[in-house]
Image (tube, rainbow over all chains, first blue to last red; front, side, top):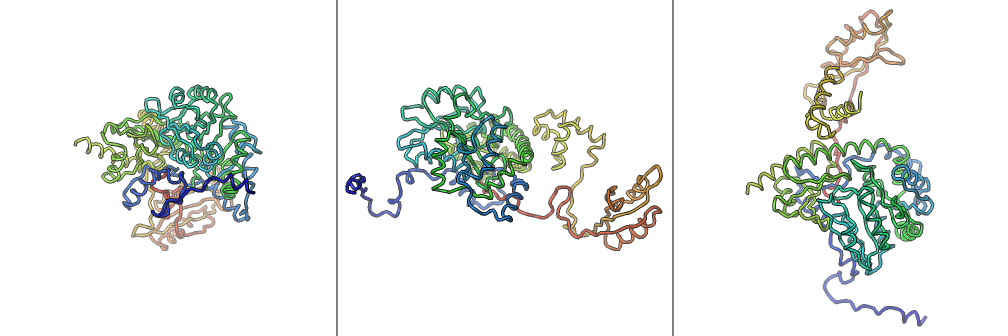
Amino acid sequence: MIKDVEKQPEAKVRETGGGMKKYLTAGARAIPPSGIRRFFDLVSASKDSSIISLGVGEPDFVTPWRYRDAAVYALEKGKTQYTSNAGMPELREAIARYLEERFRLSYDPAGQILVTVGGSEAIDLAIRALIEPGDEMLIPEPCYISYSPITTLGGGVPVGIETFAENGFKLTAESLRAAITPRSKLLILCYPSNPTGAIMTYEDLLPIAKVVEEHDLIVLSDEIYAELTYGPRHVSFASLPGMRDRTIVVSGFSKAFAMTGWRMGYACGHPDLIGAMLKIHQYTVMCAPIMGQVAALEALANGMEEMHKMIESYNQRRRLVVQGFREIGLDCHEPQGAFYAFPSIRSTGLTSEEFASRLLHEAKVAAVPGHVFGKGGEGFLRCSYATSVAQLTEALDRIGTFLNKIRLF
Amino acid sequence: MNEFKSKILDLLKEDARLSPAKIATMLGAEEAAVSAAIDEMEKEHVIVKYAAVVNWSKVDDEKVTALIEVECSPERGRGFESIAERIYLYPEVKSVYLMSGAYDLCVEIDGKNLKEVASFVSNKLSTIESVISTKTFFILKKYKQDGIIFEEFEDDHRLLISP
């Protein structure tokens, strides 16, 4: 007993005064409030119903009725219990079959697949299971906003790697190599990319895999937009030679199946890694909600036609928006995945923040300034095209008028 | 029907005012090809008309719509063709379908009021020789027509900005 007491670290002396913040952990204090949240507050505060928002990171489709109906029926039948921690076995089996068919990934539903509360939980679990204080997480940017704060929360060090429009916002082996240190542990890949719409082909990924092998890295591949590609089909990083055991694939139902509010995601990978994530998952959330699991099962079993219709519709709007930006004089690299266009606003001489704020107030169009997505995002604007053709057309008109106005002065 | 044409139809069905240029952009095709396909479909009567979908219950001068089940005896050699024609030529008749099941023709008719519809049925429809019987059903409220929901509801519940 006495030995145990001796092992206890010395209690830190708390500062006195100054509110409640002194009770917070260093991690909780270190993470900045989300830049998107700040912009959200700005937009909401204006309470102007004439605003057209291109700032929404979710489909404009309501979950197809077929999936909703399956969940409603399950509720009527009294399916209101916990499920197995890793998720309903039927759902894990369906996910395994789906990944095999669509992306040539093969995972054992017992032990290699974990159903989570959205892709977000899977990302959190993976980082928690793998990052210790001082470990470096390599993050190609601009990227989705969660990776860096979650890393910081666990004492890890996020290392942003800038990607460029000239390269289609792809990660290159050279820039990856340049960012690696002896503390580098985890590389995050988020392709198709939120916010840039970039994808990485097999040829693009191959040199990355080589570096990963050389430096003994683990890869967290966030493939939530895998179904939403408009040229070459998505290639999962885990399908590259030698990468299966080193890769945790994270995906889910939010984007392709229009199921954001259900919070249904999953992670797949080596049993040792998934097993550790499962431990954290069972102590923290127990299991993903059963209604969502039922709806997801229906989506995989009978809902692919609905999914393909939605993808076709995004593709039509993608072409419209890219062409629209080019016509009003904004450079826009061609997004090949997800549902975002990422035009450059550098020609205006304004910063992303200035441009987005003025666009909101003067032209009544909301879009997310690129700098909130990290390095390389300054000078760009994230515009979601998951909104109606009529709204997109009107938004492009308004942006065009706004550009003419600021170019006159 | 090829895939290109059916994609054009899908877009026009949602918004008949989309220009060929815009359709071409959305489908990643040439504008000339889209225009040619539309011309062809107009000529072939695949595209019959570009009409507005109206919610008449919002218009002050209301009207009534009825569905009429018509049982009739077909003519030798011509089946239901000539009787259908006799019915659909009346301007107040909106649609006529040949049905399987308990009756033969389904007739949709618009009238200013109940009386007008009743007079059509008794004076015009029932007096046609081969008509055996009719059953009239008045439409009380339209919820959805041709895939378009008439009820007004907030269809975008999304947050204005999300990651």
